[in-house]
Length: 116
Image (cartoon, rainbow, N blue to C red):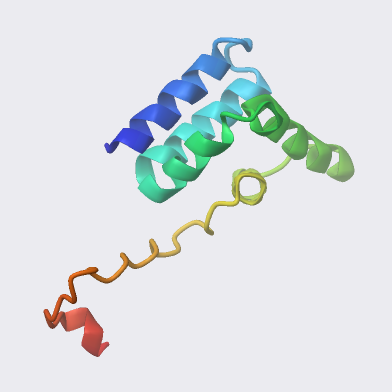
């Protein structure tokens, strides 16, 4: 894991300690930790957002709860994932990571992916 992934997970766990084990906000934290482990770029965005109280796991859970109330029931894991990705401004699940910026020194290396 990179430093942003570790930082985001530590921040999520700190917020989870303020909630009851297995409560809805705690579960949101677990889902966010899974995203952070799988998506380093998303972890960076989450770590930045969690510094703001309005972007806490409790606030994210309120968005999921609002959809559950609208449906008069619950939400699926996919729906919860979509809500979290929208709330934190994350790319869609399974979308490729953004391409790295070209080397500032004028890298003239040919890469196989340049031909696809």
